[in-house]
Length: 450
Image (cartoon, rainbow, N blue to C red; front, top):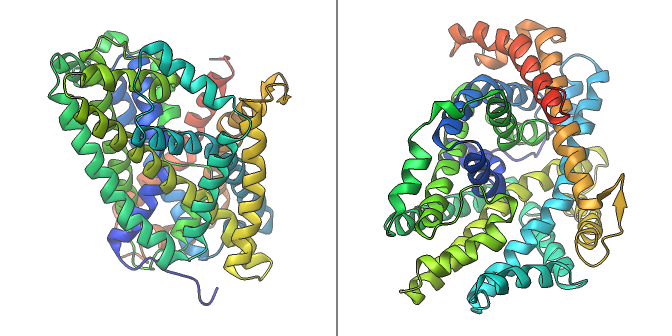
């Protein structure tokens, strides 16, 4: 489509696309999953899964997006038949739902950043627990923060690819890395931190089981944003000479590296004060405020600064993800309805803000807001993570592996036969057989069949 933005440089491609993958899943979900699944052994299995499933899956979506240089629905249709368009629609719907409930957690991060600045997170363990319960059950403030986060995302996306997404990615990703490294250094210097470092980096292969393998497979799948149409949308802004396999590898390594740094940030501090490494989803809002206060109790100013930096880090990580999810629907409405980017962004912002309000109500002030016995927020999480995301990635691999003209795919993969030719057959075998099988295993595991 004439007038579409294009990422201005290779570093912009890597930072923006890595930003779409780097989010609360890296800083929050990866550490507690590592803690629950044996530490370093889980990490090694996870890296194997990134190579096995993540990078080939990323390249698949890159091929579709760059080939079409259009929104996800048109991109899938461009691969040979209009019937594939529905996979693009599925990705657009999935990302919209995710943005709606993700904004609630991102809003909590904003509140905690504000509370850290105001010194409101100081107190004993019972105080911190009650603070979270009181805040999350309030009918007004969580909604305000969630809608506010959607509006911040809107401001970035409405400015376009170069002035909005690219510029913000170039600012936030280095800041995110800088904050992460500072907190990692502070955490690793604490007394007893070596136990946490050992837990994270010394593998115990006796912990490796079928469950650990499947958990790592699922984490690799979700961490890299496979199945959301995000990678397809962002690659539509790639230049024609972008090496897709090289970009996917760099993005996967950056994404995984940030996840490892998040572990080095959390586990040394947790072990230093005797907190179990498998504290679960409560880690960032209940456990870590206590960890920071205890670990830096003798240096209250340091603890205060570290707490602010940590929640700023979470906000930055969340924003890089919400921007990508917003862009998927925005460019769809912009191109399909032939309206301005600003109007298209408002359509998505309105829908996501409304969903965020109801999701916030369902886990706070109005817990009776449920579907199939789950709060609306938990239902949206289940629907997208366990059904829609795997389905989108599975259908993408089947489409490219079995139905799309091989020459078209080979030309995109190799940039017209100029690069990566020897790896094409390996990638194609992986996408035809290994990736679909892995996704089926994830499905079976999630539903307790395997």
